[in-house]
Amino acid sequence: MGFADQFWQLTVDGLMVGSLYAVIALGYTLVYGVLQLINFAHSEVFMLGAFGGLFAARGLLPGGATPSGLASVGLVAAGLAVGAAGGAAAAFTLERVAYRPLRRRSAPRLAYLISAIGASLFAVNLAGKEFGRQNVPVPDLFTNGTLFHLFGAQVSTLTVVVFGAAVVMLVLLDRLVAKSRLGQGIRAVAQDADTAVLMGVNVERVIILTFVIGGLLAGAGGFLYAMTFNASYNMGFVPGVKAFTAAVLGGIGNVRGAMLGGILLGLVESYGGYVFQASYKDVIAFLVLVGILMVRPSGLLGVRLGRAA
Image (cartoon, rainbow, N blue to C red):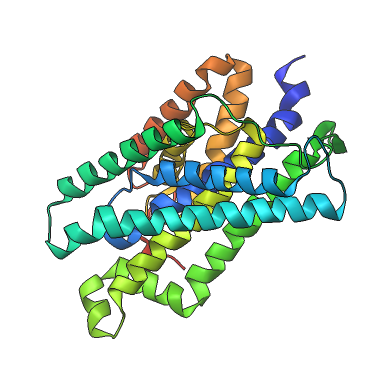
């Protein structure tokens, strides 16, 4: 079948994967917006959240059973909640151990980079030792059949669950940053931290909560990703690089830019993988990134978080 025949199926698949990239990319964007630094250990926060959700689902699901109805909804919700909590705990620990001591000593930016890479290597090797170095499947939490057809494309239960949960998280974060008191603090620190202090903003609290919120999203996104592709100790690397690409594509430091970048990247991968070969989809995605940055170096919506509505 030709590309036109598969267009809607490729679009559905690309939207699902792209929404996951967007959820992970928000962690990069939030931390960059507040600290002007890239958190290179964010991919391991994503991985640890995935395992947290996996163990929760396994613990609540009787062996070999496939739930249905409200039981499926409850298990997915429990996996998301525990995954988010695990990601938040990992991000909080990362901030306390790898970032805060350097901030208090006014360390150069290179020190933050080295510290984050060290934390990433520590986490991934610890996970490999504790969880094993093979793929770990998430148990079936629902009957993953075709739920409905959209313009001829098959839309599975898994697709609806993953895409729906990701969209809800994206919308909630957007409203949090745009409308809440904490969001005002985040935007103030992102725009001018020194002035924010004079206006009574607790910068340390904002930084901690920014890490925690990014960890919540990454952990929940990790569980959704594991439901789709299984979990592994090194599962964070490729999605982490893709999410960083999405954040840069949309405009690093811009929440809506990260959302847009993730969706676009997922679609480009899906279409490109069909037109060429699946093994080339990573190459295609990065070529698109380079092309966008050559035309618009700040990304598609390149406005700093402090100036984003």
